[in-house]
Length: 543
Image 1 (spheres, rainbow, N blue to C red):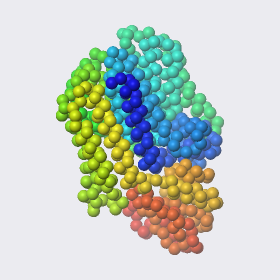
Image 2 (cartoon, helix red, strand yellow):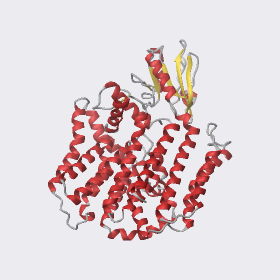
Image 3 (cartoon, one colour):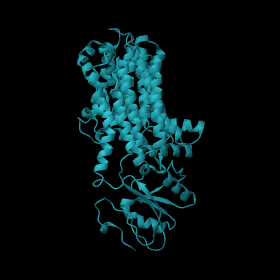
Image 4 (tube, rainbow, N blue to C red):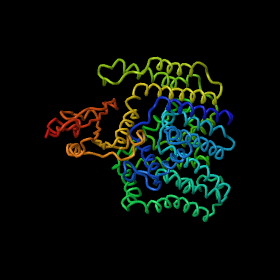
C-alpha cells in the first residue's frame, strides 16, 4: 500500500473512533473525571506548578497531561472536547513516528512499517483505548518520537538529534514519571547490537548531553514545585508513587506471568490470523536483522521489567504491543503472500460472532444477571455479524489487501462496540447532571460532603469552586449537625435514610446508584455502611 493510502486509512480510523466515543461515551469515572478535575483545579487556581485534587496536592503523576489540557483551554475555552481529542492526536503522532522509524530500520521494505502500524492501531484494545483521557498515549507519543530521533542520532551522528532524543525523554518522564525510562533506555544501552554499522560512531559528549537534558526537564519542574509545595509532596511524587507501583501498594497487584497470556488478547483480532502465525515461523531470521534488534531489545526489556513490577495494568503494554506489531509487519512483508483464503475466517469469526455472543448471553441469562443489565440492540449485533461476513466474502489478492480488510473490519467492530456498550451502560457512568446539581448547590452556599472515597468525580463536570469534604462513616452525624444546610452525597447501595433526611437527588450509577441528602429536621440518621456485608447494627443510631 502507498504511504498516502496508509495515512488516510490511519486518519479515517482514528476519526471514526473519536467520533463514536465523543457521541456515545461520557467522561468515565473515576480515572477520566479525576484527571479532568485536577486540570480544572489547576486552571481555576492558576497554580500550574503543583497539581491539586479536591484542594490537596495530587502526587500520583507529574503535570504534563494537565498542562496540555490547559493549553487547549487557553485557545478554545474550558470544555471536555479538547481533552478527549488529546488521546486520538497522540495515537496519530505515534502511528506516524512508528511508520517513520520502520522506514529507517528497513528502507528497502517501507511497507513493513505501514502494515505493522496499521495492525497495532486496529487492534481492538488499542482502538478503544485511544479514545480515553489517559497518560499512556501521551507517553507513547514522546517515546515513539524518541525512538525515531535516537535512530537518526546514531546513524547521522548529529547533535541536534541527540538533543531531540533527550528532550523527548524528559517530556516522557514529565508525563508519567520514571516508568518512561523503561522504554527510553534499552535502545540506548543496546546501540552496538542494532546500529547499522558494527562500530557506530557515537559521540560520548552528545550522549551525556542528551541524558543531562532528559534529567533537566523533570528536575526543572521539581525545582519549581518545591517552592510551592512541601517536602512531603515531592517525596511522595518522586519516591512513594514509584515504590508503591513496584510493590503493588498503589493497587492492581498481579502475578509475575500476568502479561504473557494478556498480550495475545491485546492484539486481537490479529493474534487469530493464521497468516501471521505462518509468518512467525520465520522469526528466527530476525536474529540476523540488526535493525530488528532495536525493537526486540526494547520490547523484551520493557516486558521483563514491567513483569517484575507488582502493579500491572493492560494499558502498560501498549508501547510493547506497538513494537511487536512492527516486528510482525516485518515478518509478514518478508513472507509477502496474502495467505490462504480460509485464513480470514478466524478473525471474521471473532469480529462477527463477539457481538452476537454477548447479546445472546445477556438475553438468555437475563433472569440471573443484574436487573440494570440489558442487551445491546440486536441490529448492532447483526451489523457486527455483517462485518465478519464481508471480511470473508472475497479472497484478498495481496498481503496489503488482507491487512487493510482486517484492519477496517476491526476498527468498524471497535466503533460498534463503543456504540453498543455505552448505549446500555452509558447513563450509568454519566455524572454530568449530578455534578451540575452539586455545583449549583455549592454556588448557593451549601457545604457539600461525600461519604466514602471521593476521587474528583464531580469537580470538572460541575465546575466546582471549592473542595468537597470527605466524611468517614463515623463522622457523618457530626457533620450533618454542624452543617444544617449541608448536602451529603453517597452511593445508593450504602444509603440507609431515616427520619430527618430528605433525598434531593438520585440517579443510576455503575451497579447501583448515586444519592444526595439534605437535613430536614432535628433527627439525623446514618446513611452509610462500611462494607457490603455490614449489618444495620453498624449504622449510627438516631440521636
